[in-house]
Length: 286
Image (cartoon, rainbow, N blue to C red):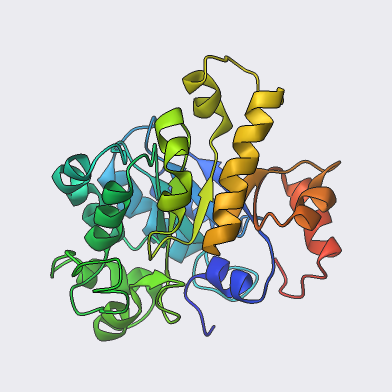
């Protein structure tokens, strides 16, 4: 396939994408997940167990169980991690987590509690090799990802080490990049900076994290009250202004409406994804 990351391939075509989540990862789980209905798999390690050895086995299992029905070596894998975007110092101190995860061959990271634009800038820089210079001097400084992990990541992607290093950059900032970075703008501090956060170069998508956002605003379990809907609109509008994708839940009974609204990443069931794919006349067979 021309793309390693099939989620990016679809987004380039203007097609919405759909994901499924997993917490317990292992080689066997990877073999099973290789034939997932989803366009990408979200590995949840923010609250799940932070186990890099298990993630390594999971990625190898995806290769063993692949290729996907679309012909890609594996489904795309995006991970959440125990660190957050509360400050630049927090990101700098915990950037090793990003490197460890990327070196396993994952395809993206979703930053939780993305509050501070300086933290988000540091996040993008932490996952980039210093020789990738698109955007440097235009909102970003040099990348800080170190040498050494490419030897374990490249075989997962099924390409040479040299090609991995060329392609392991953030999309859409680098049109040839294969790594997706996202933000969870999921509390009132992140919301205050929503517009600036979404515009940091190198970010591809964002969500409003209604569970955490509601708790931050004093609600438990409420997602559809008037104040919450205003919050959702602000984050959605910030994504539109920045030209990045918005992530939102979808159900079989509302997926068409959500697509018409402009949502490009859907969290929901296989049934909802099937309805959405037919609605947008998806041609790739997955």
